[in-house]
Image (cartoon, rainbow, N blue to C red):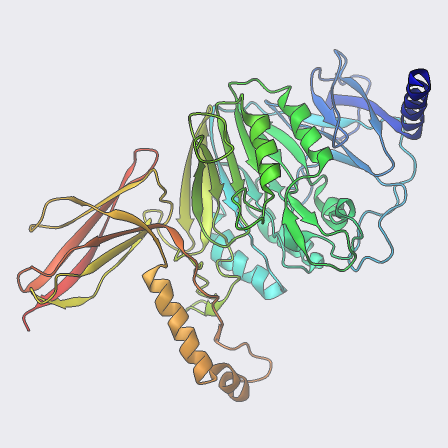
Length: 539
C-alpha cells in the first residue's frame, strides 16, 4: 500500500512538472538602452526572478530558469543599485506576461491578449542606479476617479503642486487607482506620469474585473496595464513587497470581497523573505488595511503575515481603502504580533478625500475632506537606512499645515466651567503628545487623546443633512443648465478620528482676545506649533 501511494505521488509530480513550461533568459546590463540583450552586454548575477510563487537567482552569467504555468507573469525583482526600464507613463517595465489563452470573453474591460508560446528567452534589462541611503517617496491613497472630470480634479489639486519636485525617488498608489471604470487607467496614468518619477501601483477593490469567475482572474485588466499584482522591489536597505489583498468572491459579476491573501501569495512572500537580510526594512504594501473591522481583513491571514515577519525587527505596512488617515500599532500583548516593538501599520489618507464630494471651491475642485476630519492630500515617506519618517501633506496648503484647532470663537468670561478645545493632528497617533497654553495667561497643559468625531466634519455632515431636508439638489438640477454640474455633492457620514485630542480650557479669562497655542510632538520627536484666537467678553 505504501509503495502504491509513493508511486502515485511520483506520477503526480511528474505530470505537474511536465505540464509546466520553463522560462529562461538573462537579467543583463543594458548598456545601449535598447532593451535587447547584445552579445557584448553582461548578465547580472544574483538577481531574483519570480513566476509569482517561486523565486530563483540568476547565476554568475545572469542566466535563470523557472517553471511557468499557462497563466503567469514572469518578473524580475528590482535589486538595489539597479533600475528597470519605464514606459511612456513612467510605469516600471519589469515583467513578461505569459497568458496563451488571453482573458475571458465575458469581461467588460479588456485583459491580456493571447500571448502564444513562451519565447526562447525572456530577458530583463536593467540600468545602474546607485541607491542612496536616504531618499523620499510620495504615496497616494485612492485617487478613485469615476469619470474624466475627477482625473482633472486630481491633476489640478494634487499633480500640479508636485510637478518640479526633484527630491522624490519614486511614487506609489495604494489601490483604487480608478473607480470601477477600468478604461480610466490610461488617462489617470497620463496625469500621474507628469511627475516624472517611477510610479508603482497596488491593486484595489475598485480596480478589479468584477466579471471574473475566480479571484485569480479578477486582476486581468490591472495586469495588462501594470504587470503582476503581487511583486517586490528594492531601494537601498528597504524591501517593498506589494500584495493584492482583495479576495474577490468567485462569482462572475459579484462585487463582494474580503481582505486577505491566497496561498500562492503567501508562498511568494515567504520565499522572498527567505532571501532578505534580517536587519533590512520590510515594507508591506496593500490596499485593504490589516486592521479588522469585523472580518474586512481575515484575522487568520493577518496572523500568517505576522508569523512571516516575526524575525524581522524593522517592519512597516501601508494601506489605504478606508478614506481616513490612521496610524495603527499592533502590540505583542494584545494582537498576534510577536515582537516587543509594536508593528506600525500606516493607513494613508486619500487624494480623493471623500470620493471627490463636497462643495466646489474657488478653482472648481470639491472640498472633499475625509470623514475623520483630515483634509485630502498625500504622504511623503523619507527613508534613511531602515528608519523612516512619514508626513501628511494637505493638498493646496503649506507644508506647515499639520492640524486643525476647534473651539468656540467667542465665550463669556467666567460663565462656564467647560469650554472644549479640540485639535485634529492629522498624522498623530498613540505615540504623539499634544499640549496647549493660553499665551501670557497659562502654562503648558497636556491634552487627552480621544476617539471621537471631528467637530468640524460634524458641522459639514449637519449642513448636508439640512440640504437634503430642503431638497437642495433637486432645486439645483431644476435651475442649472443640464450640461452644468451642481455646485456640490453629498458628503458621507462621519467616521471616528484616531488623531483627535481634547482639553477643557474653562472660561476664566480676562475680557479681550487671547491666543491659544498648541504644540504637537509626533512619534519621531518633531514638534509642530499652531495658533488660534478666542474672543472673551463679559456677559
